Length: 213
Image (cartoon, rainbow, N blue to C red):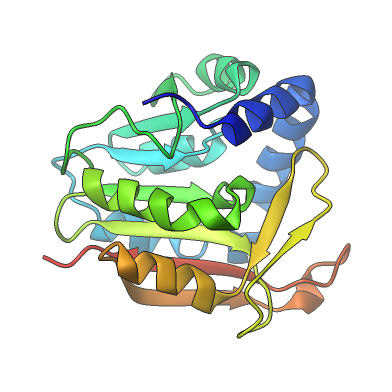
């Protein structure tokens, strides 16, 4: 399968701002502990016999975090320049250029999937198919951790002026509905109150899903 056109455009946009985004992302990850809070639980739930995928891995900072926990990590992204930064900076994980909508993996190959503020660039009408693809490559019992800027409950989706590429905020119901149709169920969630976002005042959600055993 070929890469979706919206992902090609997203990759090109991140290529143009690769260094700026790399500096921001690493700083944000190390200075905002609430946004890391569910990562240890995700890592503990994953099957250690299989690799984990960090989808939309960007400059590789979250992949490196998972690698320090003794896990095999596959970082995938559509930006060649971000992947080059990741390989230079974080030698432990394996970084590959690939689409999160068309993963080059066998069914059940992964012990877990993390998408840290990466699904926001997927158009709303493509979210269901993306979850279906994730469920295909996920082993039974495997977790999925999705982080995103959240809409108010019951409000669906809304585009917003992301600094790099077109993006959407999602309500939890929208993502949970699409995930449920793909066979993924909610295990836990963490909502970071909008008061913690000094720029926009938006809530952030970290949604932990799981493929049933």
